[in-house]
Image 1: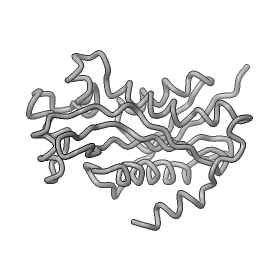
Image 2: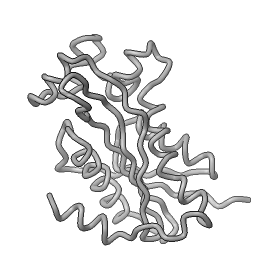
Image 3: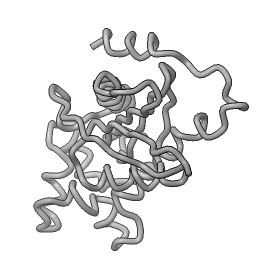
Length: 192
């Protein structure tokens, strides 16, 4: 019988939790613990802000781990500007295990140009999407990607992709012998 994998996740968002659990179930049975994270920007803009949010979520979750063999996951969604004419939304996952970490991403998808201007101006994508779709809890279920793809790809799928991407080194420890240590994450957290 396989040992249950304890996962501490830095989110209370059901869509993110389902995606994280789906990825971890590829390697075993899971038990998930949610950790409330305070002090993050409501709408990260740029890859640095997205990575920072994922790092903070993972690091604070790791501090709550009750055993040395647990996994801590930070998953952050955000916006990256590709050019003046394009911005994309996607997710970054950071997974910490045994004082080592890995980073993964989901696909990033295009948003309408007029939304890019609103987002850079300080609006949240969830608010824009609620206005457009009429779905007030869109961030907690299908997400903008689900709305634009008519449900073919959802926020759960993006959470799954980012988490699975970050899990690759832990699934293949013989190929990824030298993962970076927590001191690198602590440096990222000190910058802000």
